[in-house]
Length: 229
Image (cartoon, rainbow, N blue to C red):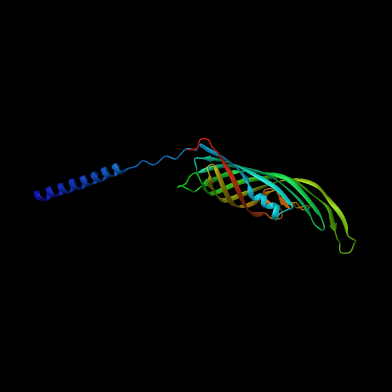
């Protein structure tokens, strides 16, 4: 009987000691969670959309340019501001169309790279607005049962809003010089449709006849060298 009691007490002490030792080991291996890096301005890039220069070859009716600023916030989040100008001068057999205007986009990018944080590969979102005007001259009307005639459509001003989602990358080619590429999906929010006179091309957005446009940008950036480690 006494031996059974001693064995019972010894078993309880053994279990208690084992559990205490295990907790002691876990405490010694505990590593506190790494604090998130606070948002801090680590650099600014200024870029020009060199893809716009292809318009001279493939879209001679359009002249446009676009610039971008991105603000590096701890290599993960980037604030982005983009702006540009576009004009159309298109001569067809039955009309002469002209338009010009500006656009502005503001948004954020998220960098998914960890190994090379100064480069970028990630996703972004933008809210865009275009302010433009357009008109048409020498519009040829050919009714079925009446003689043809020409007319004109006076200049009208519009503003359009859209939401833009992008996937892109930026890589450092030379010190402080980056090349960037991105693909975008643009979804019209308001101001696109006009029953009387639909725009041919909306600055920054694309074809006025479409509510969703796809696009691609090719940028050369210069990293302003301050606060860079």
